[in-house]
Image (tube, rainbow, N blue to C red; front, side):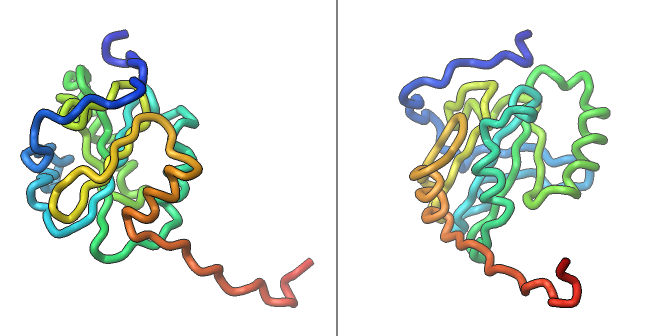
Length: 175
């Protein structure tokens, strides 16, 4: 229960206590650590997930948008999976996540200490989204789904655009 608990989403997220640029999350085998201080000069989007939110529809809209948006070269993204309390299963988790990482757009990191959620003061058990500006300032933090006007705000923060439609199907293939 303690590992997979879901905390309530507060009306207002707590203020940050620590500079997020000091956060370093170890990488999967063969992957460099995720050092937030080294991301200066980039706009960065972090998607937070875990066993508790992986099957939830809560982040579906923003995840689909992030998968289709065209991002400028100055914008990068990362997925941080919260696995606090599951260090005993590290080998199995890393084997699964390494395999899964090849299927997603952004590099995937596993956080066994909940350092990401703790640093950004996000409740456990929900889809999370954090956007940092090029100077390391927090432009936005969300817990739960991001839709509607918030989705448009995230798109603007990232400088993202919708992909151009592909070519039409050739007439001889249409039924």
